[in-house]
Length: 188
Length: 197
Image (cartoon, rainbow over the protein chains, first blue to last red):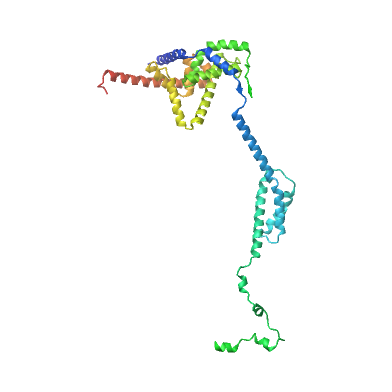
């Protein structure tokens, strides 16, 4: 089959298809009138997807506003926490350099509401560190003031004798109490 | 709250356009059918949406090309949009892509009522197996009798690209038809001589 012949065959097949389509095609007037009716039909002004998108946007904005208002007061709180940590005499794990760094950063925290993003991101981390050091201070205090529950059992009425020395001007009878009982030793 | 959509285009223009659209209606329907994978219901809906767009002034003929080319481009775009919308809706309703594809296949087989001859059926099958661009190029040239330049305008591609799609499409269609003819030939011989393997 030559190329021209093939092309003619394709063309013939297409024209056959076209004829069939023309027979099944809907009337123009019907389609046009339906389109006209659709154009005159009142349309819903409420668009669901638009409403959902607006709702999501409002939620996002509200969350952002809430987050920003919550993150801002952290800075002054952190500053006061640093000050209290410094005031306490016991500062476990907090070496000298970190304390110095803390005091160096102090004016930055106290400065009223610096609204840069980096500050907002760093402030919570500092607050966490300070809270951790406060916790350690509390724990250290608790350890220092700890007493064993059985410490009372170790004390006795004669503790005074063991812990004191006899004086030179005491009488012999009193001195005897410090001497070992020879008779008792022999019996043993 | 409701609002009515007014006809934004000039009534005189609409009347003139209506006459032209009526003249081109059957060709438009054929093109819509091709764009909708020969689904008659969908093609009718697409055509209706196109007329609605024209009535509402959303689609305006600027006169840069011929009316037929412009109309076909609008049909093509509308069909693509409608197809995407239907696909999305089906995904949302069924949630199962396989089921959706099955449903589409059933719809296609139902709509493809026109199968007068076996040859025509195979031809349509071969056309469906072609890539979209190639199918469009062949349809516009052979069915709608458009030049390659006009076909390129409708498809929204350069003339070189349209020519390439046309040539490749023609080659593939020719191959498909040749395979089919060979198959027919073998079947014919078998029918004539059942002992032949």
